[in-house]
Image (cartoon, rainbow, N blue to C red):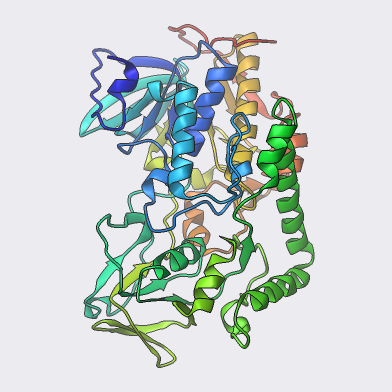
Length: 514
């Protein structure tokens, strides 16, 4: 029986270790980031021993966790897809099932599934300076498992998967109907012919509304304040044609760079000319909605464009649902609940059989694992990020957090490239340890991100700080990262050392070691 059979989606995982197992690299998380980083290890560092720890019972991360109606990407798939395995279809914002298939097909092709350990949740990780290794405590179905590794890759994303954010809703017990959070969508929920109220105005809400409106009696989106909503084409017919016409994957690279440049230009325009972008988005909303629709009431946010993530909708499906009359928007606050109804502060009453709380998620770095260095706890919020992928004073640990204003995977490519350079340098010089130095006194602390979204503000205490200059300040700019992350000297404000009591083989040098 193959290893793949043992960790297949339908078979339970059983692990039995007679001694503490040591690996070169442990990847935490088997979603978009973990699978991507593992594929890079396969291709760039053959001979490296590694495993992926996945707390859930299947691979796929976000795309296997979220099962609500209409779940899809709100990013362009030609950039959300991996650079080394381009998205070959015309869809720009495909459904969650299609993205999940793509991830698992990639993992199979690169033999990553062979290394996944399902239902293995990292509980704690302690760095042992004397032996230069991470000591991991892992929960596997209630049994503690121990592993050690030379390098730890944190690829579990930035939100907790054990439950979304539930705001305080006084009087909700009086509602009497079913209350559902998108992060825990029941498979057997029947909303056909029922009145549904969706609380929220973010990407999840604008995705749910048109999907629910196809079968529900009516859908009302109750939002405390509006968001910017931008309609984009659901398909890019040029992409498959270029892929056929241009040799050696050049067509995919052209489309990828075109989409990167377009997204960056729009973001920069939003930051530099916010009133112009406001007018553009308002004009587009007016054109997509029936004459006389109160656009300024429901689609005029108080904040500037891209001060929060913008909601992208394929082919304007959200506006189509509103125009059809099968869905409406109410911009108001909730005063309370009656049996089968939501009372708004304005005095309006919205009938409802089902209440969907699309109110966001809870931030949670590193899957809630406790980090320590030689037994001293590491509080993430007291550390400073190094190049947006390591923590000052924490050895041999890299994490993946994508861009807030661009596609997540773009940052993953840079992290993988930097990690490869770092490991080559360490192998060439026989170093065991790489630790970002403490930032000098002149580097001032700032919040990790400047988004005003509720989930960010609620979770800032979970995030590291950023500094006032490189390498302590992430750029959140793909083009700048192309120039800086690929060219930043590996030795810049990085301390290297060797283990005091080496008792293992060094990391493989990989091809083209220098």
